[in-house]
Image 1 (spheres, rainbow, N blue to C red):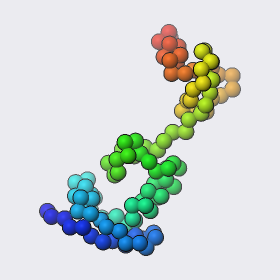
Image 2: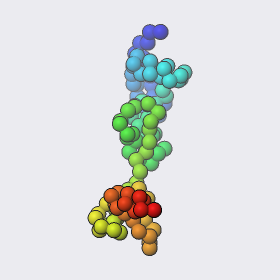
Image 3: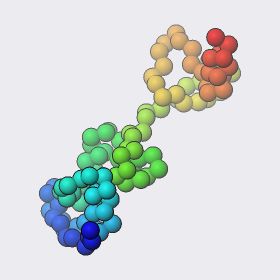
Image 4: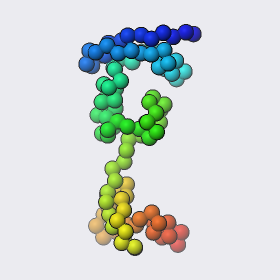
Length: 110
């Protein structure tokens, strides 16, 4: 099946954008039957709104299904060694928080 570049109009901002033959092949290989309704920048902005992030994905691979929003990190001081580090959860008062090295030691000693 041969694909050709198509000019489409964005349903959100109204600009004309190109739905390339390569993108059409990617869409078809994933089983998508509809053409995109938004231009790439509106799609990116929509993702950012939906996931509350800057819209980037790990590996920056567009449309591969591996989109994962970035986690909020919290700065802490390790309860064991005193090193400044970050953790992917909000620490609770009165509970120890460890850097990755000290956490491994504590976890292995259990």
